Image 1 (tube, rainbow, N blue to C red):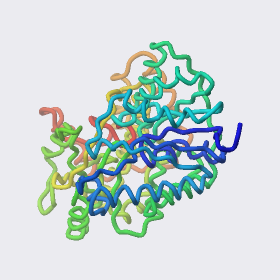
Image 2 (cartoon, helix red, strand yellow):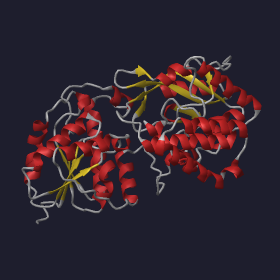
Image 3 (cartoon, rainbow, N blue to C red):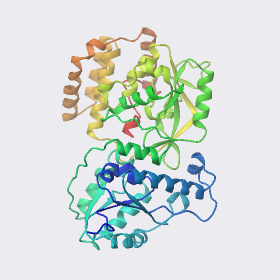
Image 4 (cartoon, rainbow, N blue to C red):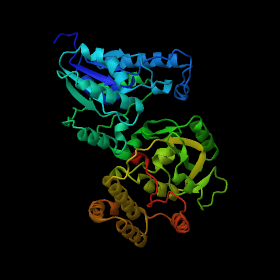
Amino acid sequence: MSHSKPALTIVSPHLDDAVFSCGALLERTPGATVVTVFAGTPTDTSLTDWDRQCGFQDAGQAMRARRAEDAEALAMLGAEPMWLDLLDAQYGGDYRPQDVEGQLAPCLGRQRGGIVAAPMGLFHSDHHVVHEACLRLHARHPGLDWLCYEDALYRRLPGLLQERLASLLCSGWRLTPVIAPPASGLKARALRAAFPDLHVIETGDNLGAAGRNLGVRWTRTPYVAFCDDDTCWQPHSLDLAADILDRHPDVAVLCAQVQVGTEGRPDPACERMARSPLPSRGLPGKALLGFLAGAAVMRACAFVEAGGYHPAFFIGAEEALMALDFAAAGWRMVYCPRIVTRHHPSPRRDTPLRRRLLARNEIWTAWLRLPVAEAGRETLRILRELRGLDRLAVAGSALGGLRWIPGQRRVVPPRVLAMRRALARGMKAGGGPVPLPGRRSAPSSRER
């Protein structure tokens, strides 16, 4: 193979997708080509909400900056960019798979042998149409080896990847799992080049919810806003949250209104939080005894004083323990519907593993912070709500906490227990307020 025909071509829907999704692969394959499909610049001077939030004056300025960042990031990884002129969906681009196929075909026609890496096409319409176009191209290029990569950041949405794999298998595709080697620090440096204002913290392992602890310890701002890969803070919400926290030094957490999907329907959890019976006089919203991890703006010093998220919990109901500790320390938690985050949930959430983690962590929270009798009742309630193997798995996993829970057990004061019981009475009275530590009705950030 000549040097003009690279051994690897990565098909990237947008200008950041290849670095995010395949940075480690690019690092280990010098001379690769990254073909970005939706890299075109609109001819008008339109300005989308997303570009406005990023500080751009128009779409042309935004695309020039993004191409420059893409070129710098790919250069660090030893890759060459190739930009097609199709428009991103936010600029009105609306293409069929055969349209994208026609644009990609000449790019792949220059490659003789080697590998083509295509996106799985998760969640985003642009990603999906590129995926379908690559499936069509596969039959026209039998001499190439094809990989499908998991689209970052959408690969973390529960169930999406599994649904796509099942769909491919049902369509007759034969798939062989491939585990990419771990990335070195070069990918992190490339991410910094693509996003100059981004500070990348490398953990070396998946820490679950406790990974947020590293970010809070690094930051030097008095307040920290949390989000997830399927949530997005709405314009002006964070400025308003900072102003509110400035005026209310006793508030540790502002829980935002969560609007679901493109239509912005209210999350049922927020409707219940708005009915909280806890005393709220002088607060900027309804008082709570809990919050949603991916929709919270926090006072950094309160987070650090509480010790952050417990590393043993990993993911699921991780907020409940912190909420009890905030309340025990005298901090207030408030539902503030004036600050808004948008949530685009996965169509599939209720997996057995998630249910088990939620239940186990609820049991651990009970035994870490509640009186023995109340912790026992809570444990029985949680186990009764489970069935079959789920009940056995949760019971066995929860017992693993016996090694460390006694040394960390600290019962919350009576006033916090009284708040908790008031919320429980409210739930019995008719769908009552949430969140209540130990009784989840809405997913935490990593579950969404």
